[in-house]
Image (cartoon, helix red, strand yellow):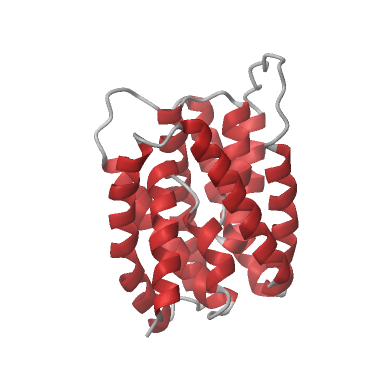
Length: 239
């Protein structure tokens, strides 16, 4: 039975997911690795993230938020998620976690760099390439937040598009990753039990987080999110 610290980790990570549309696995993975092996907890986080992302997609929308370029990004991410799953099968998981910590640390530090120049529109071919890279990372450690957030900020999408693209990307990559986990034998009874236990907490956090999204100043939230990401990177590196 998970202890109180595990539940607190899931609750806090769920609230962050509800506010921003991402961050559940980013915050919870390095902490949960204290109690679980990577190959045990990563499928759990992927299943939970799938449930929450489907919930976000089903919320009522007033306009079409997914364009053609975003579709290429999402589909490419889904296809290459399988690459990450098979890399995780054959390469030491702890080394992959440490490597991902370094990559996410660099990406997070890059997010501090601001440019006064107006960004040019990204060419269409960039989207599937970025999707392939992020999909591979997602398959390995179930985390896509930092690189996808940085890319979407560079693509100048608005807040609603940001949240919607994240949700669809999570759904597609999670479904494909879960199929891959099944093929390699990682969907154990323990994984399914933890997923059933954590999913209601994540759904509740998604609902409450959406409320806080409307009252927290966007600058304050971005600062908090970057700090949390840096903490998570540090925990991944020392794991």
